[in-house]
Length: 459
Ligand SMILES: [Zn+2]
View 1 (cartoon, rainbow, N blue to C red):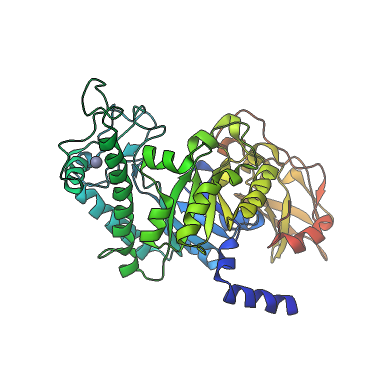
View 2: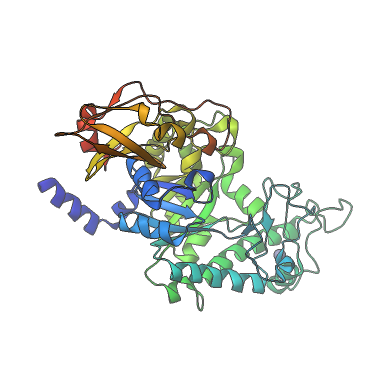
């Protein structure tokens, strides 16, 4: 009992502690979350010991189910464009960033936040999402200009008329933008270095003022939704002179953002040259120390979170032990916690057999909860279940949950299972066979595990 009082005291007195809940990003548009109940998604995230969900494409029923189960839920939104233009209003094509080379090779449509129409639309869209559903906070993700490693990237931008006008307004002594294509031009970025320095400063200032307008401006998040927590995002990149490189390539200066916008929490996102490494060391959080230190100078107590990717590419899928080590190293480096993209794509999804984490007695049978989604064909095959008493009339599967209807039983029902597998078809990649439950898994042997499974890490 004493421990509980101490914990409550710490949470009340040390607000920073409240950020330390284990966090994961969930992209509800992934196949893994479809064709199953919200209850089953909630049960699975709980069984995997997460309590803080950063949600992409969340639907009202899922948001409510997570909130009812005591999760903290964040609305995650991309600030410099979109993966799908289907929800944009007519005329959106005029919002597109003007990049050095045209096209969208990475499937992403960049939209320019120096365009007042896009900025206005984005603010309204965020406020509307936060008003419609009971989110605890908002993640303002990727509020930057493309792209690493700088002007040599074909994606480098933006050179639209709005950026051009805003640059000339900020620096009236200039005649034009730096030239990024003609190396013989007097304004070529490598030739007129003073002009290029101004351009870098302009890009940083554009990002900061954009975020400030969305968060603190008229009709912005703070004015409309003062209780919603705000997480600003920037990048970390393991290169020499990291802060200067991020300012130059993306216009990102974490300290400048934090100082002006005053978020409730700041997330340092692992940049793609780092997360795409197949052998990225789990010690890498320490590499972002320069960014952490720069933020600490302007906001010593601001909670910081590290974002990492655990499986967007086939050869860099991360194991549970890798993620646990990153979480440990991140804390040592000064982060409160880690959030990963994305729950359903980690290496564990391809290697772990479904494990029973909970058994509940129902009026007409039992409910079995597993730590991952099951293949419904094997999970509903009643010959895969043997009882100590009575018989299984039928089995219904729902994501990671199976409900057995049982008749003729006497006393406590115990179930022995074999032949049930996870759902290979719901994975991002299909290079590994389905994982089958351990032979003769018995519910009565899991009594102790069941006690612990709700709130402690069962792994
Ligand atoms: Zn622009």
